[in-house]
Image (cartoon, rainbow, N blue to C red):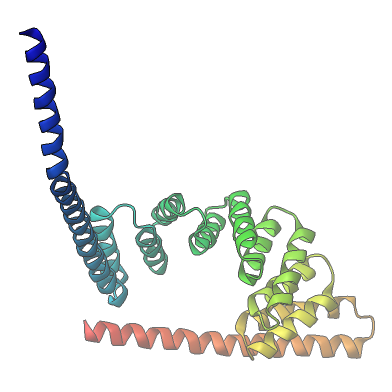
Length: 280
């Protein structure tokens, strides 16, 4: 009896295996369908998310009011907190408003946390750090930008400004030189280098750079002011009375021209404010 039971069990097991083998293709087919349906659902969910992100981004990018754009980016971040560019764009909008430096810094920090090679966020964070007087931190950010984008002249220029504020005048000079080498008509770099040369006593070198700045932007008020300072410094060192008078006359002319441009700019600003108030 025991032997018969064993044989019967073996026979049942064999039939079970055969039955399973027969339905195995169906089981596999069901598994494949489940996997395909799951993947399809995930893709649909991702597509819906992408569509919502795109919609919010489009709204924010087309919004001309920085305050409203900040609100839209905040909504986007609340729903999709891992979107690095949303933090970056919100930080940029705060920068347009010229306020909330700590908020800008936090947004750029988060964007960089999510994307460590986010060049634009690193660059902007460096600029904010300069304003916050964290010049060493700014240099570190510009170092990273330059490592990622060696031809970024603005990063060299701004790193030069941070170095200058830390007293590294010759390091700053090298950065300004590189910025100008990369961009031959870089107004800010010529102005920065010219003012640095003036501070180091190289008045002729400063005058050359300021004149170059005025070639790029004729009658640029800040350049006129700097050139007038150079002319007055040259007048101080001049022994010949006639030449001294000539330098002073040039300085006077630049200062008068600068005053005229300042007055026009002020009047234009006042007109814009009046128009804005009328529209309101």
